[in-house]
Structure formats: C-alpha cells, structure tokens
Amino acid sequence: FQCILYYYDQSDETWLLDRKITSVLEEEVNTEEYRIDLRHLEELKTTVKLAEEKGVKVKLLINPYYIPFTDILEGLDSFKSQIERATQQKVYDFSRALPSKALFGDYQHLNHEGSEVYINLLHQKGMFE
Image 1: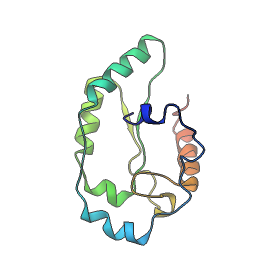
Image 2: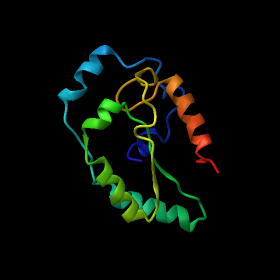
Image 3: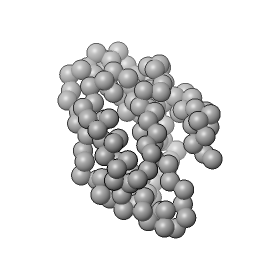
Image 4: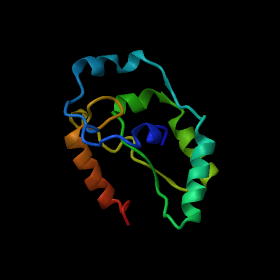
C-alpha cells in the first residue's frame, strides 16, 4: 500500500527478485530492529472505503516474510488487529505461510520461485474468488 504511488508509472518487469536469501542476510536478521509504522492506517481505511463504495470486493493480505524476520517484527499481530478494526475487513495473514528460505530474495520479498508458490497458495485459499 505504501509504495503504490512510487510504482504507479513504472515497469513491473523487474519487480521479482532472481536471487535467494544469502547466508549473510540469514546471519544478520537478528541485528536489526523493525517496527510497524501506523502512520498510513487512516489512508488504508479511506482507500478500502472508497473501493467498497465503488463495488470493489476488498481482501487485505499480509504477504509472506522470511520467518526469522517475522519473529523479530514487533507488533505485527497488533497491527493486523488495528487494520481489521479500522477497515472492518478480515486480514488474511500469510506472513508465515512459506517456511523455505529458498523462496525469498530478502526478508520481505519473494523471489521468482516464491512468487509462484505464493500465487498457487492464494488460489488454493480462494483469495481470487
């Protein structure tokens, strides 16, 4: 959501990563502090409301993260609850859905293989219905 405007007018041909998470990233995952930023919650609420007013069926997802990253991400469950309260929408949490490090290019981004696995999972879970 936060990057929509940045990517609005750019090619999507290079969005997926070709690499797999490195051993250096694996080792460094616990050296950083990550916090959820609540500043955009009101904008998300407004966006969901506008979409619904136009008849768009909204499904909110938390995409998969590299699980050791998810383990240190402070406030994810609370953030999910706040989003659900603010938008009156269920948030489907896939943050831990893909346990294999081979599916990630970094902590927050799937690689090509991971994106295929995730799309198949979304189909299985009915996210495109």
